[in-house]
Image (cartoon, rainbow, N blue to C red; front, side):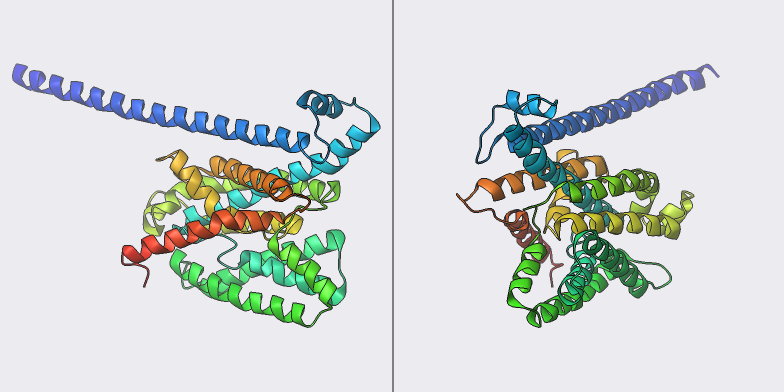
Amino acid sequence: MTGTRLQEAPDAARLADAVRTVAGVRGRGRRRSVLVAVALLAAVLAVFALSLSVGDMVMPLGKVVETLLGGGDGGSRFVVLELRLPRALLAILVGIGFGLSGGVFQSLLRNPLASPDVIGISAGASAVAVTASLLFQVSGLALSGSALFGAVAAGAAIYLLAWRQGVAGQRLVLVGVGFGTGLSSVVWYVMARSDTTDAQEAYLWLTGTLNGRSWGQVWPLLGALAVLLPLTALAARTLGPLQLGDDAAAGLGARVEPGRLALLGCATALAGVATAAAGPVGFVAFVSAPIARRLVPGRGAALPHAALTGALIVLVADFGAQHLLPSVQLPVGAVTSLIGAPYLLLLLARANRGGSGG
């Protein structure tokens, strides 16, 4: 009896050491997660302040803060409150929408190519919006609504086409790529049949742009995100089990298909409202989540970090689009493509070296 107790004592000590080690690792992971989130938020605020200060009329940061608090002269209020502030806020909101959408898609489908601009969601928004604009002269909020409808309709169609007693990530991606290619053909056909000036304006929107945006685009997007962010947070409670596979998720008590459908719906709506506000800004959803996961390894989908990374990317890209070339304002999508296109080529090259690239 005494020997058994002596044997149990070292076992209990080892178990206690293991528990302390696991708790320490988790604590370090949580601290790093918080520090990275704070650093990303600080970077977003810094670029946001820079966007409000720098332009044709450079303003000291103190004057910008004074203007935001209700002071300043008429000229500074017009420049800051009517021109720069809505554009900078819209960049943040669009980046959050795309970054979070890409994070959900890639984590849920366990595929780095599964972002809305690759699997046909953005193509659906573009096809309906361009058709409504060029053929039916739709504009304003109605045009934004048509883009949102196109994204949701494309997402629903892709989901139904990929359904085979459930939805596998690889199949949904392949169906989405094919569906998106077909919708892109519709876009170019409609543009080829339209007036040259109208087609040029549509092409600018298809690139993704914040040029000329105002409070009329900020408020609808802010309202949509106020609804979608809590819904996505609730739906993301099933994301961890679903990343383990359907059988494991079901074994853990998760409702597999309803949970997947809720996450896909939220991600599609996030991409749709962001596209409605600024056009299909390329590669933001594609690169935000991988960058976030590298910043906080071992923290799963890292959705809040993906949203902040998306906001930072769009803010920096838009600042570059405004000031990269003198007297020329580029579409923000042209700058984000400079970031995303090399990453896509690198991803495909790695897949090919690993034997999975065909």
